[in-house]
Length: 148
Image (cartoon, rainbow, N blue to C red; front, side, top):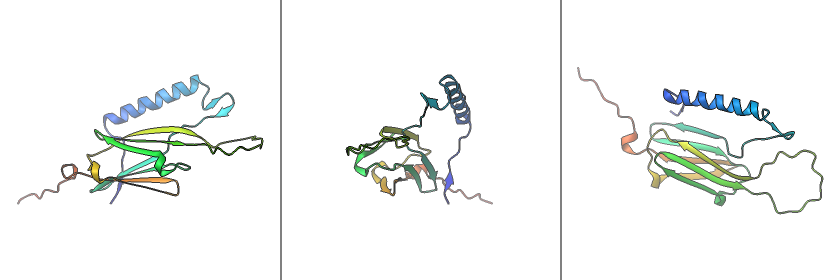
């Protein structure tokens, strides 16, 4: 059974500090509006889940080609890098509103357990990158029976 990862312990304090800093900078720079244009982050949204055998990361990467995405794992930190490129096609249309985002992105994800780096699999389908990482044996929970 998969379970979603939640912030616990000291991580909760860091998350609260990050939220407070985001609020502070948001108020200083005028909320989420810069020069009258809405701005959004260029990195993909992610979901991280784990079960007893593996960790599964799903990242939204619409418009990115699989060969333009780099994935690396070091010291229990997974890095996903890539770039969504604007088409080179010249258009003579006048845009009144454009929400398409182009550019490079990078996401660093702290993994909850050690994984077998050589057995990681990544697949991209319909704009969703799914990365499956088997846990190493020592990272798996051991069930211990109590003797009577």
